[in-house]
Amino acid sequence: MSEKMSEVYEAYDMEVINSGRGRGFTLLRTDKGTRRLCPCNIGEARLAREREFKDNLYDAGFTRIDRCVADRDGELITCDRYGNPYILMEYFEGRECNPNHIEELEAAAKNLAEFHKAGRLLWEKESEGSGRTFDGEPGGLSRKVKELKRVRQFISGRKVKNDFELMYIKHFNYYFQQALEATHMMEEAWEADAGTKGKEYKSEKQEKIIEGVGYCHGSYSYHNVIITEEGIATVNFDSFHVGFQLVDLYQFTRKVIEKTGYRLETARRIIEAYGQAQPLTAKDHEYIYILLKFPEKFWKVSNHYINSRKSWISPVNIEKIRKIIEHEQEKQKFLNDFSCYFGVHKITK
Image 1 (cartoon, rainbow, N blue to C red):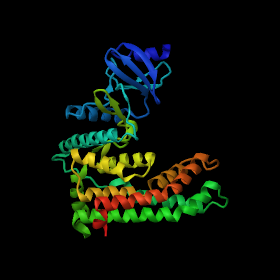
Image 2 (cartoon, helix red, strand yellow):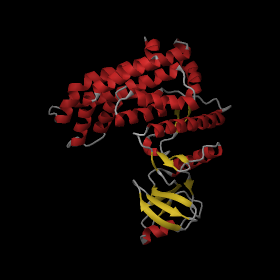
Image 3 (tube, rainbow, N blue to C red):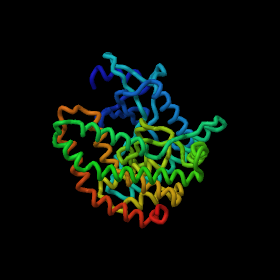
Image 4 (cartoon, one colour):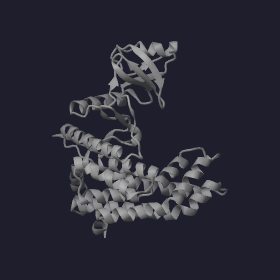
């Protein structure tokens, strides 16, 4: 090991037996168990909040998580001789969940449900008696529609357009219409859930939303589910927050079907496995359908474009938008099959 890193290791109460490289981190096998050392890219306050959250989650019974480890001085951030900050976390010997292995996906879905139950209890305990409410919508669809409009306006105003921009504008209206439809469906679903209109709508909607709110992982994907001999471990809580928990399930399902093909059977087994641990209602299935209907990948390409350098467009962006177009028919068939299987068409019509 390098002298620079050995100084960082020595700051912790552990003996390093051997080390290896992971995706953006160093994997350490120590006398205290497996640890992960990675560069720190978040502020001290957020890191302290993450540690508190994970400790509370651990105490609530959801224990197989990558908790933060303090150094000998009780600090969560340790710097090397050049001032580069690092954080150390508990980690697990195993491998990432295989998106092509349906039994592992089902186990990951059940694990997510157990996390959500613990996360909801934590949220209820924290908010009890505080009068705290949650005002939001699953997936932030309204915000994303505004962002799509902004990208269209920007590209339309460019006199000379590159290949990406020409392709984007050509297909924009089709995907924007989908975004509008999904957003309107979500607004109607919220209104129906609240059971009210007019001036009292917002406050009563907030109370209704509380039923589906708790701590969310924020980036629950097969990459962040570790399969070990002892069971499933959950890692990378960088994006944890209080929100509508079904968004985690939607994101997990969407990423799997985008990776493995838009097969209803895969989505069905993931969602039903989740429902075995955390029962889902017909309305929950409707919310998941609406979120899946929203053209998320098209929005992601838009967002990446508007936040990147415009003088040079990566060929990767062009390839991404081509793949979105190529798989569109497959996605629409999947949405139709999903709607029929879960009876969404009976609710939305």
